Amino acid sequence: MELKQLIQIFSEHPARYSIEKYLEQKKNFQLHLKGAIGSSLSLVISALSPSKRPHVLIFNDKEEAAYFYNDLCNLIDDKSVLFFPSSYKRSVQYEKTDSSNIILRAECLKRLTSDQHPTFIITFPEAIVEKVITQGQLEENTLSIKVGEKLSPEFVEEVLVDYEFERADFVVEPGQYSIRGSIIDIFSFSDEQPYRIDFFGEDVDSIRMFDVENQLSIKKFESVDIIPNIQENLLKESRISFLSFVPNNTIFWCKNFQFSCDRIQSIYESTIEKVPFLELGEDRVSTKDYLIDSKEFLHQINEFSILEFGQKFFLAAQEVIQFNQSPQPAFNKNFDLLGQELMNNNAKQKATLFFPIIRNKSKGYTTYLKIKELKLNSKM
Image (cartoon, one colour):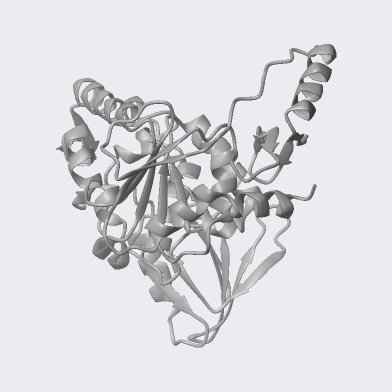
């Protein structure tokens, strides 16, 4: 069975129609999704009709969110799926930032302010607890460059210095730039590869993204936005919660809502106790100004439509959408048990589907599609 056939099965599922009925509404709603096992939720989402409304999915932790992100990237256009991590390697309370995570966060914020909103943003409590800069401040600290416009290379370098970019012979990481004659290479904090800006006098002649390792062009662009390190270089800017940043029509999907609330509160309390102040050169600012607690999270998320899923439910629901699924049994390499399961499925008129492990080398995650049994009728 091809993947598109599997998605088609889920597109005909009654629960999918029930979800879409609410997604078409303009007013907010709260739903419970029960009985969705393994990777079935990603299959249901991939079967939904395309929507211009952003969807934010909150999972229990980074690993779980990463697995789901990779599932969804394999099922739908990965340009429509973004990962929103913490700015830090583990969590804000450990104070060690990760440049790759900062890039991913900046990419999400940049896309949310553009005309093309991402369809899905995958995240977890450690990322949600950190506040972000406002949309206005993001725009003020963004250098936009377009092909054909008059722009002095000296002005571009001046802006990059203000953004605290470092000049280098060759750019290899975000926050660096290099100048060779009429060419400026810039590694923005909102992209995974740097840009090469070619000037003809004071006219922008071309913009290309290129590979750091082989210096070969990857893609041409008509315009590009250069964003500084929004986590460290803009710490003095006022901050808002991520929930205040996203558009009002955003749909939130939350696994084990109570767990997310408790986890956000735990991170908030342990961080302000361990790191009460952030050091900004000679200045010190309160850590409280850069985090949200569970009370603020709960107050703000109630302003959005929410689909709650998982094992436990916290919010009152307008409707419970039920999936008729069960976990895959553990065979522990016992082929006799596997054979017996196949015979039992056949006797119950169930179709058994085998899925290989999908390795996405570019993303670095392994996907396990765990849906093994699909009933021959429409009830899953």
